[in-house]
Length: 68
Image (tube, rainbow, N blue to C red):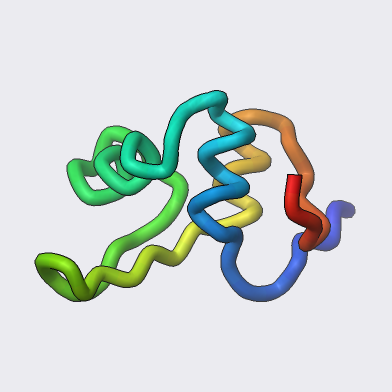
């Protein structure tokens, strides 16, 4: 059984895992074609929650809280 870290993964970490920039990750979550989290808010005041479990399911990368 895999124990996933509680809380969310930073956008910067997800971007490095996918080999893209942070704006690509934000756009994917906002537009729904990158199913790794949710966005709340609108305009410049958006908050992104990225699920470590969903990233693992999609990529196989197990995030343990470190910056990469």
